[in-house]
Length: 284
Image (cartoon, rainbow, N blue to C red; front, side):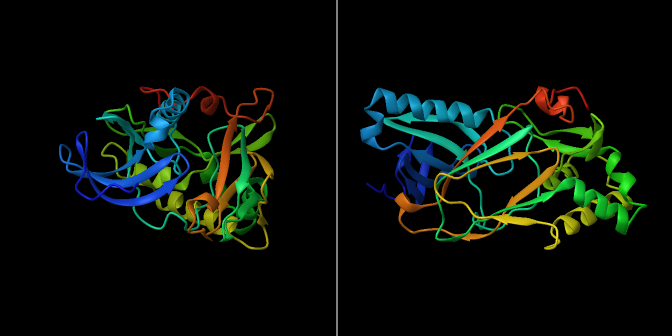
């Protein structure tokens, strides 16, 4: 049952329903205390009365709160009011089905399991970061060494009082091979922090060339998912993105992929900093 605009759930006032699925309905809501809009994921009443399903909902909240990823909304809390259970999430404005940028994840291996496909589009686009670097080296040998120098990166977890930054290069040599860690919007967002110096002209040029090279159609490969397909990528040598897609109107048919991050300590070209996590008070 769709809740009406103006209904109050704890400290939040509902404005409009923006989504629905098997695990609940999502509403845009207003937080008057902080004067901001949020997303409330409300568990159906039949689920809330089931201890097992309610426990699953709570585990989802705990997992989301532990993650820091550009494609996952931040979680602000868990609200219970008059028998209603809701996750309080970051409200992400804009075209959520739009094409992503090439990036890596903070793990040795990223896995995707396809449960349902979109109506159209949504391919997994991958490219060898080793090939991309070699092409950067061929096109602009003066900029390739810049990728091995320190960049400032934005970092924020929901439990932190404010964003911080850490320092590391995009490319490094690990175990005799090339290791690439690349989330370009983390680098650009770091420029918003008051204690981060502006990027140099060389850094900006190197970042833009890396992105342009990765998006060269002669270098990347598109992979279409079918239900049951599993994709495993080695983050140190593969950049990935998702192309734009059109989804189904029926919530039961909407695109659904499960994501898995794996640590592989036996990979000699892995990254110990990413395996151990970013620590406050440490820049590298």
